[in-house]
Length: 197
Image 1 (cartoon, one colour):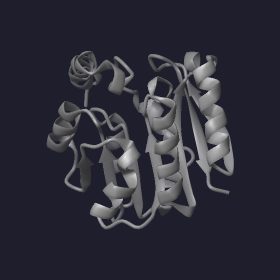
Image 2: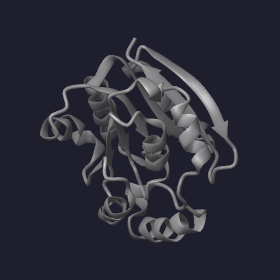
Image 3: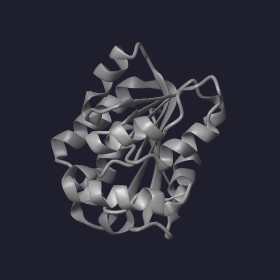
Image 4: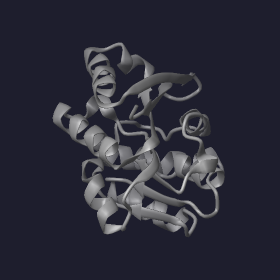
């Protein structure tokens, strides 16, 4: 699938809802690879993606996960969610909701625990209380041996809000390690891999 196929719809959707989207171009396939580095996709039963956008990372997850795995893609932007419902594979369950509603979403989908959560949420433009609520929700639904992978833009990581978010990750999860940096993305991003212990 060509990058231009994603680019125009994502830019238009971002211009309509810039704060909730947090980016003006879609993530690259390299971002998906950086996220997948830390989740052991081959051993997962249920994976949740937060901030699915137009589906670049969703498709990479769909390709990497075992056929028997469940994949829930959560996206707050109605236009992106509708597009993803049309273009994603049949096994992808698309939910148009906020990430802070994750425990309720999983309850409605009859999921008790998830093996991995991956996220491209715009953390540093979110309110502090929403960051806390989303991370607490992720930690709550993760299997004890599960993992959480997220992205943070390189330039934001050096700001006060970026440092505060990194501290919040450390407060929420037992282990936080920095993954690869994707310089070819716009903006460049670094992956973070977290576990509960």
